[in-house]
Amino acid sequence: MDNKVAIVGFNMASALDLETTRERLSFDLTRGLFDDLGIERDDVGTFIICTNDFLDGRTISNVFLDPSVGAYMKDESKVEMDGLNALTYACMRILSGQYETALVATLALTGTQVSPYLHIGYTLDASYDRPIKLLNELSAAALEARSYLAKYGYSEELLDDIALQDLANAARNPNQARRLEGVSKDQIAGSAYLYEPLRELHCYPATDGGCMMLLASEKRAKELCDKPVWIKGIGRSTDNYYLGDRDLSGSISASQAAERAMGMAGIKDPRKELDFAEISSLFAHQEPLLAEAMGLLEPGKAAEAYKSGDTAIDGKLPINPSGGPLGGHPICSSGLMRAAEAVLQLRGEAGKNQVEKADVALAHGQDGVCAQQSVVVVLGT
Amino acid sequence: MEETKIVNGAWELSTFHFPIEGRGLKTMLKNMKDKKLVGFKCPQCGMVYMPGPFYCRKCFIRIDDEAEVSDHGEIMTFTIGYADVRGNPLDEPRIAPVVKLDGCDSWIMGVLEGVKPEDVHVGMRVKVKWAEERTGSLQDMQYFLPE
Image 1 (cartoon, helix red, strand yellow):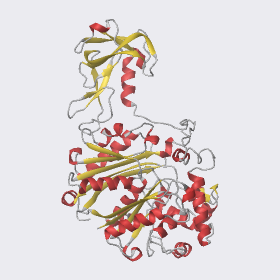
Image 2 (tube, chains in turn red, purple; image 1 turned 135 degrees about the horizontal axis):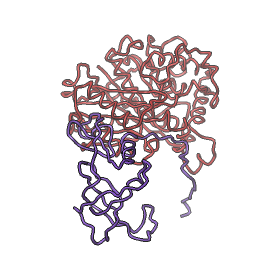
Image 3 (cartoon, one colour; image 1 turned 30 degrees about the horizontal axis):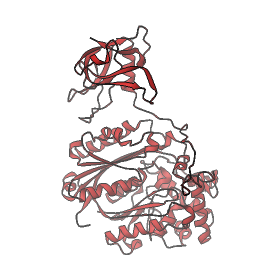
Image 4 (spheres, each protein chain N blue to C red; image 1 turned 90 degrees about the vertical axis):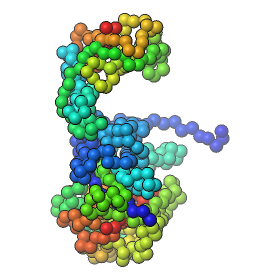
């Protein structure tokens, strides 16, 4: 990109139950971010709210969230997808030259207000997929998992290895909702099947959470913070809705989104040039599936990579050093949280989960059943 | 039409637990038992909101100062309804004014009695008619009457 846009700050919260309301969560996080940056709401040029009307219980739900993110009498718009789409929109608004700053406000109280996984049923096609009463988010993910495992002849044990790495990383990360101290492979392999081959600890937990992030133009970013993190490239791609029209053992959308983002960022060899990746893998198998699609893992070598520690925090290419969505998945915030976790790493502020070399990172977000849509953002110092 | 199929269904929402902000309304209802109307005031800009939010929408700071407002005020706008909000016809036309109570910046909506529809006007002074037996519910404030 010719003009530069940076992430200058963020504030996020995530828990299985935050014991709050949407208004309080959005106000507290936004107010906290403004206080951290020493700004007021008049310093924000445009606001992008990113929530889900269905989960908010109102249509056009941004109308009641506007004031609580500080958008009273301001320019505001809404995205109803993963937060990385909202980041894309905010970035475009700054690149238009119209605005110097943009607040991306994402939140959902998915942990406490809806039946976990079941609300996704309302995204299903009403002519066939809903009436057959066989599909929900979990059964669809299980089909995808089986398809991926079968493609390379992996055993279900791979799912335990992936989940162990993610859940152990999440346990050390204070930003995560599900922190299982001393989590073991036996514990994961012994957790109940939800839909085979997926067990409870292979799946994301229903999570309350939100993430507010301020983007700024190059000039304004340098005034607002010491360590701006630059958005180097963005790519998106959307696959067919129908599972029957897709090869569930891979992800063309992730592959294309990554190709577009890395093309913009000038990255030719992701395995060499990227230092780590934060991926929206809502289920254990999606992590290597998406990583392969994006060129981060060699196809067919996932079992070896997880066994040898190549994907661990001190590995060749750490994947989800934050713990990823297995540690928490507030809908709409999840992808933006991947970017926020990447920012922490790039600033050297990731604490116990800090990767050694952190200059260039990839953050991935997804929407739809079996990651129908992918967004990829390349970030750098 | 051969290409169109109608699917009947329902949006099952019974699994929702929906927490909403409660302090402003709770404070208002609690005081209505004593025929008092209480909102919240921003210490920075002086705005008085009722029901009061927990933050000032303009100044974007938390607010905790309660402020009593009058049960008298002025009609800012009104409509005369011939059907309820679901579209069912009413036996008698219903006057629904929005009133700016003295000492309050928020406007509040209610029903106006004791006046013919043709005599209502913007700027008209009105007062709250309180229920004889008050229980701390929205019904405590029965309707508005001309002052």
